[in-house]
Image (cartoon, rainbow, N blue to C red; front, side, top):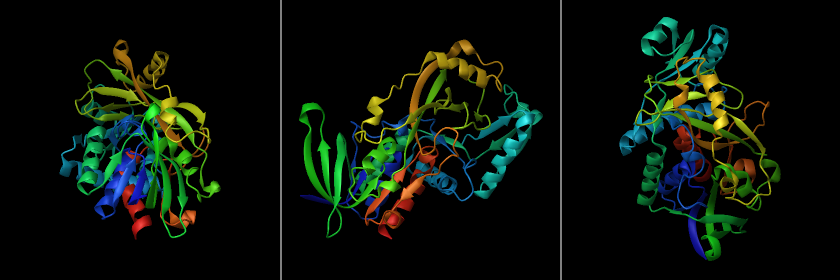
Length: 385
């Protein structure tokens, strides 16, 4: 039976960041990825925003890891020449929603974000003449990054440290061994060429994103009560096939389930809007690990463009609506249902699970990309220190 120090399940941005950290700490590490290449799920279907850490409750993992991860990510991107820009963003509101902006300031300051700037309508007009709002917050720490370039750089560091990504490979079962570690059954290949192999690993990190709960149910010894019910929310995006008058990201006040339909820019300056929030309901706990993405319809219904127009015209009245097109979508794994308080990340290690050498990552949605390197630090501490 082949032996390895650590197995990370899932080669999204978080899984790659965790695997990189373990490999650089001297642990022989393999990443199991069920798809044909890394980052085909949530990691490649988002806005590519480096969040400043403005929205998350005081004391939450989302708050602390977003702020820590933001600085780590800027540093990493600069050192590895990953395309990125600290463009800043504006959170805009009508006068009737100013109280919501004050709540954002309070949460941001509690998380250590102290550089927000209040802007009135006149200051906004000077910064972004096409924008129409009564008041706004300017966040200079917000940026954008090439998510694919980031994942390539993380995988490059992983392989340089002796690790590897095994694509088309699913963890189908893991059983703790009496002498420590786990025996893993891994299904590799596609179609009729699928083969099962056994692998011994001292440590397992479940970073399977949309399928993290399904993977957890395949690891014997995971307390069932520690596996959360996951809910899926689809975020649809629209693209603008016209010149964009804005040089910064534009966000409204957050809405239930998300940050509202906002304008982001890609590295070429092209504008896109989204995500909206389309609740898909509870995930099937009995589904096969690695099956979720294949079961989703990622097409964007053109009928949803009317909602984009309605939302965006509240702050950009001259939006050229005829130049708006359906773009792409992504699915977010949420640990709270519609109408419930927003749940935090869950990073459960040996002390929470009562099982040495195991870490589960549940509910890693936004700001997961921003927090990825900080999440990796937490996982490393739980497993190696």
